Image (cartoon, rainbow, N blue to C red; front, side, top):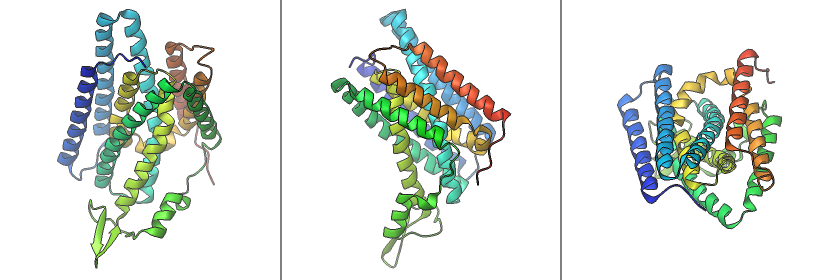
Length: 317
């Protein structure tokens, strides 16, 4: 599978990701227990988006000189479309985080730490899954059809169950942990477990981290096939995906209080998954240009946000 990413581009991007995570951790440590304000979250979110756009502009500039204007335009469009899709799907991820934090009454200071650890875990997990996915598509072209069917089914399920309430009490992982592990009802600072009379007890923070990790896996399985519908270039898939994840923590604090304002966004995401799944299934017969895909995704997102702002959410019994 051909890629525009040379060894130094991969190495430079890896170094950037490490530095970005380190800066996020340093800022987290400096802020301590202070609650992240909407203004701070907005500034950090804007910074992460700006960095992604600057990266895309630099990528276009480099490819324009090395491979020509046509290749530069195509790869830049692929990056931006993939980034937009991943950023959109991350919103649904954020609402699941909010549900977990609310259910377990996680203090604000611990939320910040769990989120950054969750982001780091998501980066490692997605990097591995992207490399495996790229290899599978290269070796077995028919895997694209499996990805397409999976996205199509997932999108339809999102449309059908968009208003369904999730009951964590019925979560099989949580039920198993309660039945097989010693759990404490209260937090103990940043500890994941405590030892009492030579018996290890796991705190709610440990349970939340496990559920966050499982959430990362579930959403990675959804989002990574979606971006392979836009491009099969591993470098574009990796960079657009990771850039979308890097701003996840800031976006959480920006959108956490606005869940009800975007009550129709899940429908929009469902339609997007149906679109990209269909695009994958017909790829050998109908080539949908990246520009068209970008326009479709953008229009769907804008319409779902506008419709959310103009209507009131349904009361769920």
